[in-house]
Amino acid sequence: LIVKEKEEGTIFNFYSSPIKKSEFLLAKLFPAFVLHSVNIFILFLWATWLFGVPFRGSFALYWFAAELYVLISLGVGLLVSIVTSTQIVATVLTIIITIIPGFLYSGMLMPISAMSAESAVEAHIYPVMYFNHIVYDTFLVGQGLASPKNQLYLAILLAYAVGLILLGSFLMKKELR
Image 1 (cartoon, rainbow, N blue to C red):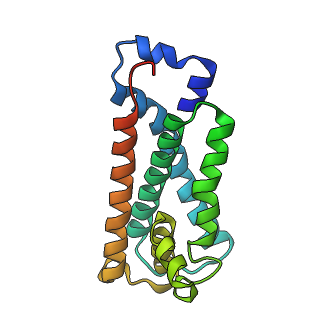
Image 2: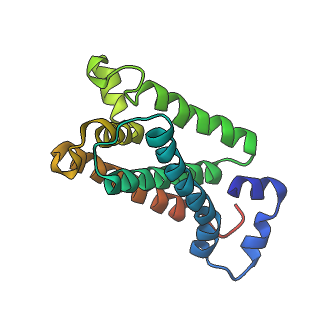
Image 3: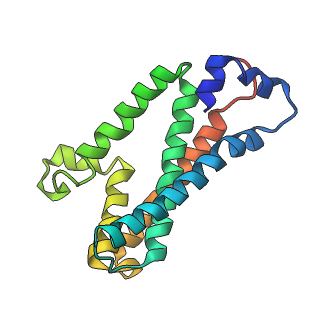
């Protein structure tokens, strides 16, 4: 949404208004966060009721991890919006840094343990691997927060979410560059 405002020139309204940067970012990110939160719940219902996928874990853990992952996605989108000036470039950059690694290094197509050493290390760079593990655990295993691995992965997701949002907030300037 921010890169769209840059492209259309409406970002100048933000630059010249008395609104704070935090208020602007909240107004841009909050509706997307709420929409994706509703989608998380709908997808959970589809998986469990419509497709009969077993759910053995903690719904609170699943929900919290999913919300963290939404914040991570919004943080990536915020950073991409800040560094790009057109929607086409933002879309291509987002695909390159999220979707492609998301499929290759999430553990969905190939287990992380079966990857070469370099690929396994690279898989640990992307937050999708951590989220995928927590979702797998909540649906099929059910260890929840009793698992030290889930605790660690949840902490890593939290660090990613906070770090990306803070970095995006820091890099967003309320001035013409």
